[in-house]
View 1 (cartoon, rainbow, N blue to C red):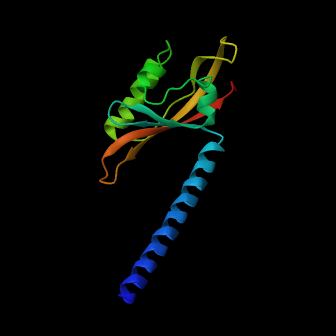
View 2: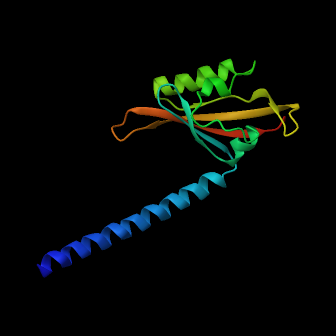
Length: 145
């Protein structure tokens, strides 16, 4: 009986340590994403629903809550059809895509339209079986040269 208790205690300690390691890794990953110079957004599933984004995209969205909304609904501006097509292609073809400098209008904090230029790197992400499960969009805000 004591041997069983000792084994259960050892397993419990192992699981607790593993839990701490996972928590630490998650914290490090969160800090990496939040402190990135890029705007980062995760789109999940074949419908490319907004699943997560960092503070850079939150500013771009003027802190509107867009989690759970389809990507095409969020990026619906006149300049967006080509970007939407490239994101869809990256997902469907399981291939990385880097856009050229793209001009778009973005609302500032006062709701006024401002000219912006972005370069997007679109990277498919996979589930544990290797199947494409969405894309991550890394967006760089670039100025006119």
